[in-house]
Image 1: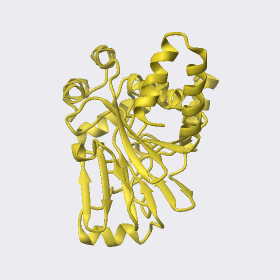
Image 2: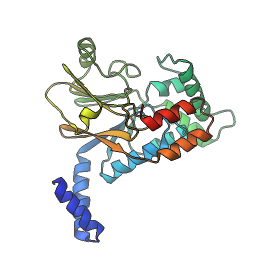
Image 3: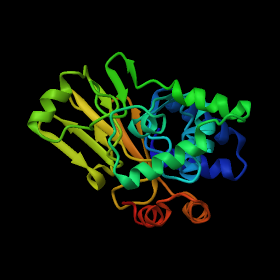
Length: 280
């Protein structure tokens, strides 16, 4: 179905045309069943996550992978975990998640250590913690580091080091990275749309129109839901449909997130407020 045809159905459905509404619903179900949504690096930003999940639902997509980076910075680490836990999706842990859990290879600086400790205090059950807090923490601790499908691997970092590193950006890192990839790899960490394959490395706005997969091995970063680093503060995630990847940018209630941060005791809240506003 063409974009023009879909817009026409949307217009008619909004005007009360039940036949058009059903046709639109069926088309979205068809496309959603053939699509994979990939998101990463939520970092405690509930409003951004809710905007992304609502958009995924509106598109009828039921196959969803989250690459980790769930907590640490934003004001709602527990609510983010609860939201992801209640969904039927594949959810991995990232390097910051492992650090919050007291594990992993991350060697944080002083600022990051403060943020990690703050998130742990919000999440780790104490002696008198209720069952819901304990269940949330147990779910968080049990998240896998990688997810494999025929021709596809999903990790937070690198296929061979799931909790560390990121997509390749030179000939040496290409060789080391792609020998662990069968066809397609999704990874987080970078917080901006990226594509890497041998001899080609694309980032940021050059991918605004999407990317058609080519022969050979390809690595993709879906951007960041809750803390973008490409000077675009909107939430970002990726959709894989057949042989094409699209990055979706979404406005969300950023001001609500910033108010929560302002009212919190998150030790890096001043810096984070500035970075969220600027998308850096």
